[in-house]
Length: 123
Image (cartoon, rainbow, N blue to C red; front, side, top):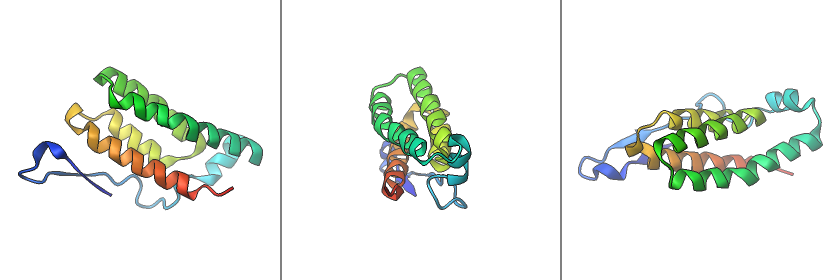
C-alpha cells in the first residue's frame, strides 16, 4: 500500500507502509483461538469490541499532541495484538514512532488496514 504525503507536492514524496507482506489474513486465527480458548462466542465478542472502539482511537489521532498520539497508538496496538490483528498492530507500532509530519500517512494506512480487517470478518 502506498500513501502519498501531502507535505511535499513538488517532489511527490511517498511513504510506503507494508504491514506484513507474508501474512495475508488481517487476523491470525491461531492466536485468536489461543487467546479465547477456542470459544467462538468470546472471539466474536472481543472482535466486536475492537471494531466498536477503534473509531474512537481514530478520532483521538486526529487532534492529538505527539504524546497523546503515542499513547492512543500504544493502546490501539495492544488491542489489535490481543485479537491477533498482526498487520494492524504492526502499522500501529510504526505509527507510534512516527514524526508529526508523517501522521496523516499513518492515519491513512491504519484506516485502510482497519477496512480490510472489517471486510474479512464473516459472521
